[in-house]
Length: 97
Image 1: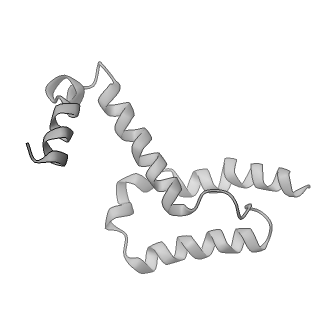
Image 2: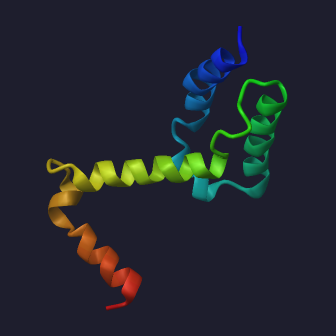
C-alpha cells in the first residue's frame, strides 16, 4: 500500500475509533493518558501510517469539540437550543457583561 493510502486508511479507521468519544472524556484525562495518545500518533508517524503534517491530537479534539457544540446549539429540535440563547450566554461570559 502506498503511504497516501495508509494515511487515508489510518485516519478513516484507526484515528476515527480512537477519537470517537474523546470530547466527553478529554478534560478528565490525566496527563499520562494524553501522553499515551501523543505517543500513539508519534508511533503512527514513525511507521508512515500518519503524515507529520496532519492535525495533532489537540487540534483534532478541539475540532471535534467545536463540531459537537455547533451541532447541539444549531439544532432547532434540541432542547438546549430552545432553552438557552447560546450566543447571548457566551457573549456575557466572555465579556463579563
